[in-house]
Length: 306
Image (cartoon, rainbow, N blue to C red; front, top):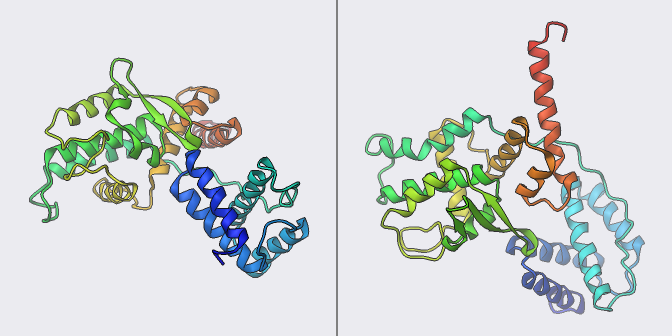
């Protein structure tokens, strides 16, 4: 299948997205979508496919495969994108995916952590360090600079609300302690500046004052290689255990918490949008529903005529 004309064109499109800064994960997901669709349709080229073909594929995914709405929308985003690329490069005249009515996503409020839970998480590396030799596992040596590193990147996650992938990409040269900020390379190769809180700046400085392996990257392991997303996910799970919190809480839940706490304390929606790096304010508006729901709970609990 990979040798046919359709998949060759798909690889050309995916290479163009790599150059434009799309993540490896996105390109891997898109590649899988193209393989699945071409296997189902038996098409050897993207030319000549009609809207009805994609409506039939939608029916197949929905009624036969029973795939959830979010996965269906991801697949059609990938299919729509390859036609947009083809039209831009004058390979196709029209986009047959455009206008196919997709199932709506169920409205789900973001899950976030309370401010007390965040505080417990931020203190977890220090707690683990102080307990070493009693509760800490015996294994590879764990140095003080690694404890300070983990405290610092947890502080950055909550202080800035950046994505885990953005966190992993940070370099020392991105920091500006004088302004209390950090340069962030986000989705679509977009760059923004994130504000660092005072506690966050102090945590980073404490980490960088230690004898750390040389690297241009900010977060490194004991061999000087940058920490991977997977490494940080595993570290987070460990610290969630030390904080007595559910290990199912992901780095993205910290991002949700950042946005929700800002709005709860009076931040305006447009500023939160810029801090999160959302291109559309409608993406950010979901957090106002969280704040409104929280206000509703407080009202119901406190108002005598609720």
